[in-house]
Image 1: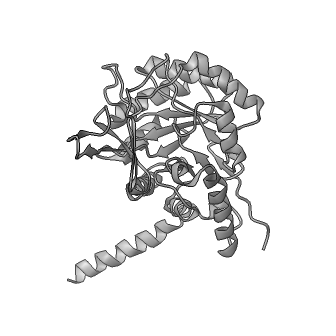
Image 2: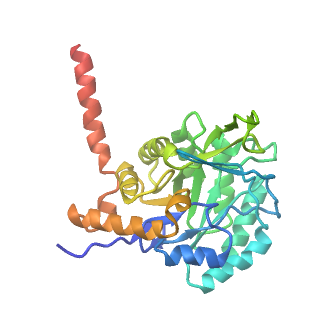
Image 3: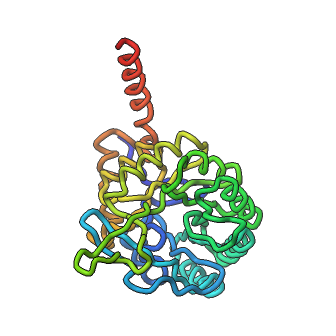
Length: 320
């Protein structure tokens, strides 16, 4: 059999393998992101950057749970003007970089995207899951029309590959994904964290200062995997899977569900930086053992089996 290749092309972003870190995880310091890349990631994703510096929420902002983690960081970041220099540093290091960003209005999204693109980012990831302060957007990820509008405004500013990261906390993620595609998105990242809460029974109060936070890690995986399954059927652009990826087996599940690449976040807390290389290596061994030469050959393979299973269930129901 010919030698396998882990290299993938996601909407024009060429990766040596389909494993990246998730936004917000080790994603601010260029030296740290360089370590993520050196540990085996195919590319790195920055922390979400906004139009102006933001301190975020008061501690505690992160709680480890038996099933993952709950966080309410509040999008702390130094602002796009400052972080443009960090992007340039990563570019000088030769690290392929996906710049995650957010804004409080259509104009802010577009302006931040342009600054990060001009600084040398290889691709952009529009954080559509963040809380917005402008009335024109409301809660962006829950409104398909606003997602389409913001995506189109960003695409008007740059030709870089644009990933739109969606929230699972919506009624119909397929509708929102299609809106992003209509707006010009080159790929969909599915998904951001699930809304959750944890309570201290001793003090009888929420553990997070913000009360609610985003649930990530193994507990989020079945929901995130379902989102990837649905989104990959709803759009004609690549999907990046994110949510509870801890092992190479998890990554394979996402590929089979329709993802072209995966992002790994919370697993770093328990597995360290080597998790990126470990997942890529395990994926390579799986492909070799199962006769696959390219990652693309694995993507979406479970869908036909899923259709067959549904067809059999429907036949049984008709007979009954």
